[in-house]
Length: 220
Image (cartoon, rainbow, N blue to C red; front, top):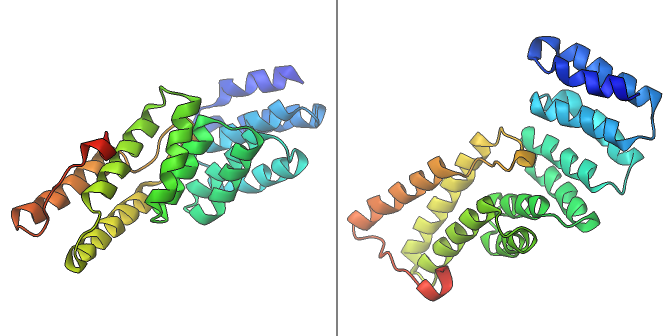
């Protein structure tokens, strides 16, 4: 069965995707209890962006191997690729419960952030860093969320409206750009979105609507 799985990467070019998929499937047929073959096939679907096509295969694999953390995580990435974020979250949570990983914790934090639950996202970014202190994406998002929370805490009602506008913009921008795979440590709310957020705040600062304050003890 190994030759089929080993040959499949030779056909990773989009024009040969059907051949690659057929080789992965042949490996599964020859060794149906070998989880690595399922992981290889499902990972291939995600790399090719074939989320709709690969989703039922990922679901069957998770049903066959319900205690495999990697398969649970990959299933979550299919839902992310299809912009079905609420459906993705339970699978990332299951993956983390089965086998805690920085990647799963980071992904949970991101989805909580998309739901507007910034405070709830913080512990997951912290867990990601406790599992991998060099998980730079978690460092970036943790600092960003803490900065926003301390900058906007205890504001007046009119400023609360501004906060809601900013959070709405962040969520909209994120949902429009979630097209890349979480398993490759990428997520849409990156530098471009961060710059958009900063520019949005700067406009209100210039109009004396927002007083930009830093709480170093909390934001550090």
